[in-house]
Amino acid sequence: MDKKDESKDLLEDLKTTSKLIRRVEVNNEELKLVWSEEETEVFYFKNLKKVAIITTNEGPFGPDVFYLLMFRIPVMIPDNILVPGSSEVTDYLLNLLGFDYKKFIIAMSSTKNDVFEVWEKKESSD
Image 1 (tube, rainbow, N blue to C red):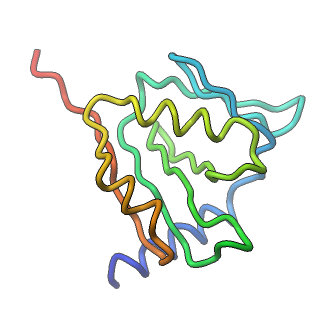
Image 2: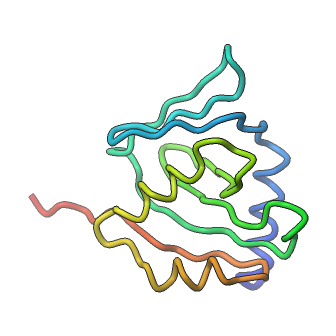
Image 3: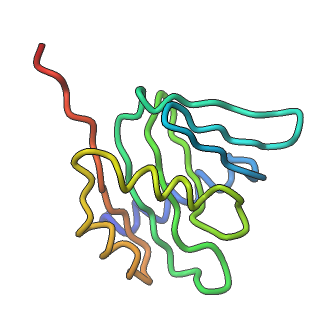
């Protein structure tokens, strides 16, 4: 199975197992996913391990760019104007030390099913 098939399979798995995010809230310490007014989840950026961008061939009529944030569990957020707060996620990620802007630009230009790893937490050597 090649990288593109893996990307499509991962995207389909995440789509079928995830709920729809109503809103995303971001500050310097945490990412808050709002599923409904009664149900939210908080993830702390200090626990973020890796960031990838998943692209699909479903645009422009469907979401075609997703952020895959690897915390203890994977979190997938569409980069979509229909999800309030998703642009704040982009702003936060672009400021991560070591973020790969070149891959980000390539990912945002992609119209195919693909995965682009744009950031990975460096292990401290204490």
